[in-house]
Length: 204
Image (cartoon, rainbow, N blue to C red; front, top):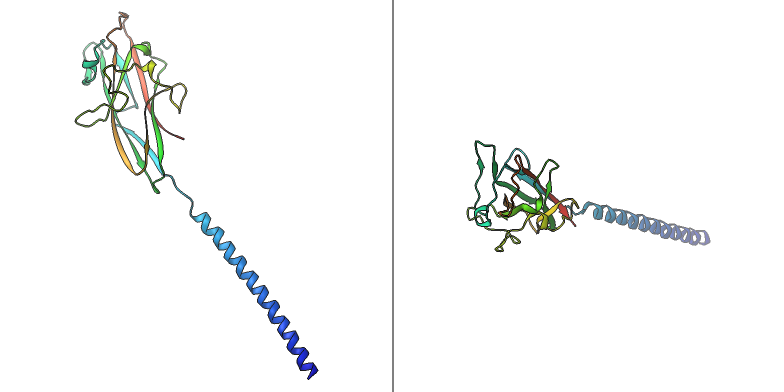
């Protein structure tokens, strides 16, 4: 009887120890699985895409004539026999959002080193590129801003901010940018030009 009782006690202790070990192992396995699951739920914020319908991402004024804001706002593309070019530049910004996490982007301009016209004489007019050609916010006043008066770009301290917006879902936005020489420009020098590149970058 004593041996039988002792055997039962030993078996019971072994069963308890085995149960403890199994429970510990199971808890560890569940913990490990939870960590793996959290890592799998990484948030993807999406991407910004910048496209344009020209051979380069910019606009150039060469031997262009000064004009009023009213004339500049409806400016069409020209390229005459004297080598004068002016007009507009179309581009689009789109967002591909996977989880609808907001993305803020900035459109900014940067002046090329070969430009010879002072930016304080370059008018900058941004519209939505639609058939109605509506002015983008910031360009709707009676006086069109000059390049030098635009705020510094967040993305590039050497650039000027043209526009900023936050996408909250997948979307596409079309822009049309017009540049012209202000009517108070009186430099008669030949071969004057202004070249500005258009850039798009995400910002915090």
